[in-house]
Amino acid sequence: MKIKLLLMGKTTDESVKRIEADYEKRINRYTAFEPVVIDNSSVRNGPETVIKQKEGEMILKRLSPTDHLVLLDERGKTYTSVQFANEINNWMTSSKKTVVLTIGGAYGFSDDVKKRANSLVSLSAMTFSHQIVRIIMMEQVYRAFTILNNEPYHHA
Image 1 (cartoon, rainbow, N blue to C red):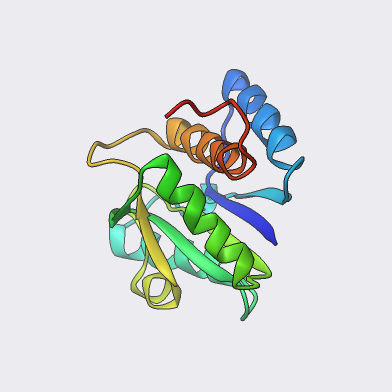
Image 2 (tube, helix red, strand yellow):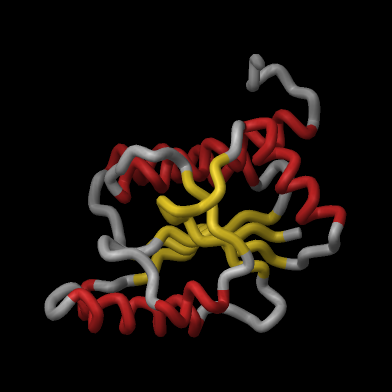
């Protein structure tokens, strides 16, 4: 199974880039992992509905018909780290070829992207910056694989 992490918008913060690179390397020890940054700088201005629609088109262009699309959304299902690890295990055992975890733009996802989604995941009832969400999601994917492999990183 391959995991892609679609990230709406670039980061210029070097510390965030270093942490992302570290987790990318760690995750790739367990499964193919690819962060995909979508440059949304050309659509950041305008009405919210137009921005969401254009960003949605950018997301949908990067998907294949067989991709299992998971949206990070405040209205999604919340998981403990162990439950999320079990969900990743379910994806692997159900022969999902590619799981695409997606962090949307500031206004969330277009209706078209929501219709295409296979599931919604919420990291918390709190709101985080996109920079932090990127790191949290990568850390949780890494943690999930250490849980599945009975490694000492996760201490429940």
